[in-house]
Length: 221
Image (cartoon, rainbow, N blue to C red; front, side, top):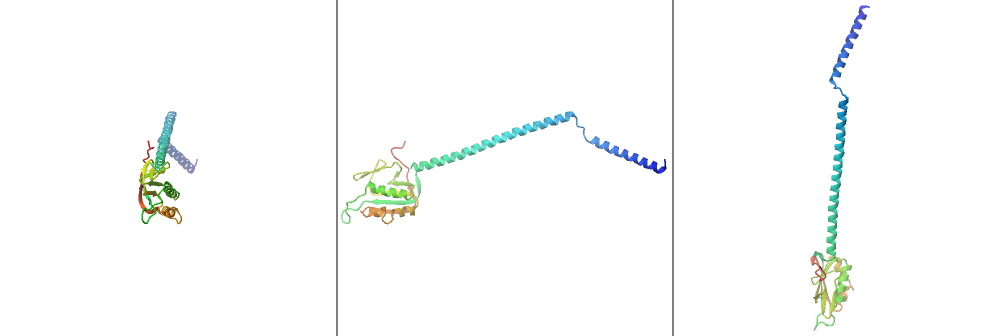
C-alpha cells in the first residue's frame, strides 16, 4: 500500500470515529420512551379530555341558566308593563299629562237669559264622545274618572256619575294632544257651537299639566 493511500484510509477511520461519538452523545441526551411512559401519558390525556368535557358541560349549563334568568327578567318586565298599561286603561291609576279642560255651564236665567234650556246628560255624552274620537286617553267629570262602565244619568236636575250625585257646572278633564282636542270641540258647526246655540256655555282651555284621578267606583273590589 502506498503512503498516500494509507493516509487517506486513516483519515476515513478518524472521521467515522468522530461521527459515532457525536451520535452517541445525541442518543444519550434524549430520554428513552418505554411502554410504561406511553401508558402514563395516555392516562393523563384521557383525564384532561374528561375534565374538558366536564367543564364544557358546566359552562353550557351556566349559559342556559343565565339565558333563562335573562328571559325571565325580560318576561317579568313585559308583564309588568302590560299590567300597568291595563290598569291605566281601566282607570285604576291616577294619570297626569297635557290636554284640555272643558267647562260646561247652564244658560243664565232671568234678564238676558232664557232659562229654558239646560244641560242634559246627552249634552255631556256628546262632549265625551267627541273627545274620545279626537284621541283623549283619560277623562274625568267633576273629579270622577270616566271608564268603560261609567254612566252619566240624569233624573230631573240631578245627575249621577259613577253612581255618585253631580250637578252643573261640569268640568271635564281630557288628556291627549291639546291642539287636536281643542280643535275637535271648537270646530265650526261642531259640538261646542251646537250647545252654545241653545245657551249652554262651553269653554275649552288647553293645558300642559292636568290630572285625571283614579277610578273610585262602587264596583271596585
